[in-house]
View 1: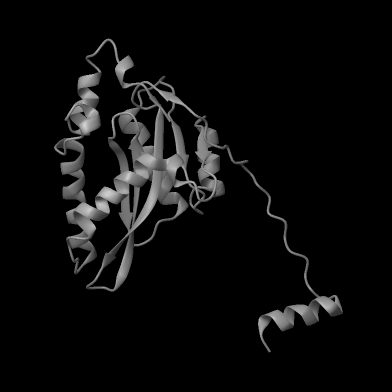
View 2 (view 1 turned 90 degrees about the horizontal axis):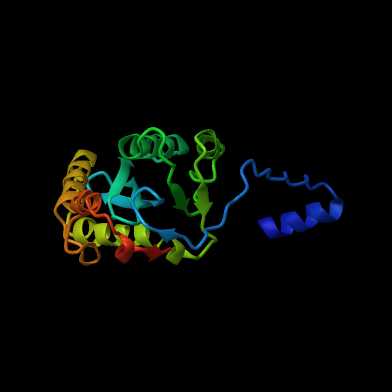
Length: 213
């Protein structure tokens, strides 16, 4: 007897247990159309998978990008990716990029279980950080991090066959150093993200780089 017939019979007999109601501890904030005029105003984050052929197992890559200067401000890689890893990675990124007393960036993500978790919601609330979650099937609202992960797939994951997790992590770390410090971006005046981020701090007028998100 398949599950559909079992469900129908149980329903007719009135012995189905009532489904639990999900309580949203932290209501979802939908993305707003934002004018980004500098670094640390809007960050996007997402999770991607890599594969270790020698172990026949996947690993996770969580990346956080600043949409203004394209710097990957935080990244985590591991055989699992839970809410605690997302919170830790975000905390490290904030500590390295945001000075005491400065406004927190808005952080945008999809609706993955790590991002809708109580731990992540409580963390954002405790530090007064606005977390936006895009509606389902709208990756264009998270376009910067989606684009970066496409680049990562094209430049690294498609070109390397990893035999161990250590080999994969070392290759990823080396690529991230290249991406942030040496990979040229046409939208950043042909500068790498870190170089552009430092250069823009010396400019008095950044109006030419305003972007509507």
